[in-house]
Image: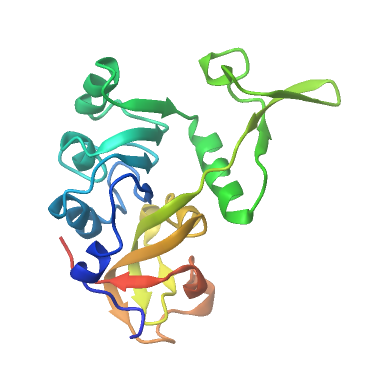
Length: 217
C-alpha cells in the first residue's frame, strides 16, 4: 500500500508548464479522476502528449476546453471542435503526428533511444524541418523521442505494487506512456492484492508505476 496516493498529494507534485502524457483513445481508458485533479488545481500552460483530444467533455479534451494546454502532440483532433478552434486562432500550438509514429516516439522515449526512422510523412507537412536519413537508398524521417515529466494512465485492475492489467481496448497508449515519464501515476478502476493478477496478464509491471490513485470520477 506504500504506492497509494491521495488527490492532495498528487496536487503537490503538479505545476504550471509541465509536460504530461495522458492515456486513453477517444477517452476510452482515460484517467478521468486524475484529469479532475489537474482541473481542480488550475494547472495550466501544459504540454500535452495524447493520442487524441476526445470530446470537449471527455478525456484530455476537457483540458483543451478549459484552455489549460499550451502545446499539443496528438494524432487526431477531429472529434473535439474546440481543439480546432484554438489551433486555427493560434491559441494552441498543435503538432499532428501520425498515430504509429506517435506510438514509436513514445516507445523510443521510454527505451532511451535517440529517435526512430520512418518513411511515414515523407513529402508532406509532417516532414517540414525534419532530418531525412538515407538507408540503403531509401529516405526516412528522423522522428525524435517523446518524454514527459508526468504520465497519467488508467488501469482496469491494479495490485498494491502497481502491476497493471488493462481490459480490452483500454490498453491503447497507457502501457507505452508508463515507460516514458519521470513520474507515473495510475488511476485504478479496481485495486487488488499482489498475486491476484496472473503474471502473464500484467501489461505494465509495477516497476514503472510510482503511485496508485483510486479516486474514481
